[in-house]
Amino acid sequence: DVKVTQSSRYLVKRTGEKVFLECVQDMDHENMFWYRQDPGLGLRLIYFSYDVKMKEKGDIPEGYSVSREKKERFSLILESASTNQTSMYLCASKDSAYEQYFGPGTRLTVT
Amino acid sequence: AQRVTQPEKLLSVFKGAPVELKCNYSYSGSPELFWYVQYSRQRLQLLLRHISRESIKGFTADLNKGETSFHLKKPFAQEEDSAMYYCALSGMSGNQFYFGTGTSLTVIP
Image (tube, rainbow over all chains, first blue to last red; front, side, top):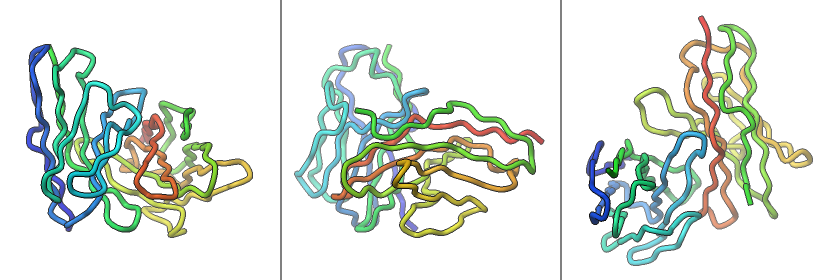
């Protein structure tokens, strides 16, 4: 059974702080994704990675960066958190077919 | 450009009634289409994909290339179908995914 875990379920940070969101998958998937989920806007892709140290921008990369040093771990970094980055963040990994497996999500609040 | 459109944010139906969640897409080439579901307090999970042509939990979805639609249907709604449903599209590479804005389905007992 595929397992995708995220480091925190809830996180509260102050404006200007650097924030790290961690995601780990245990199925040796090459592809990993970070989305944010907002009511009325659905899921929007921030970044994805198709291999270690490889990354591609999604639709809304501004204000975010990512790191993939190991195959199982994909980190999302908010360099200087802002209130408009308050959201639910979802990580996903994908096998060679098309199915994505999602983590439970991290609800980030920036005050 | 919006690639996946779900026109209904909210949809309520009575138990036992048919339900249809609409999804339209725009994409050049041959996309793969999916429906994902998120039940209350659970993680997002795949419900079905058009290439498998299967019925999951009584739901089916037919890809209509002429109308660029991938509507999700179930003949008799059940209370446990209440959830948020997302239509999604994947491009040829399989690396880019585009999700719709979601439809919240409520099945009234």
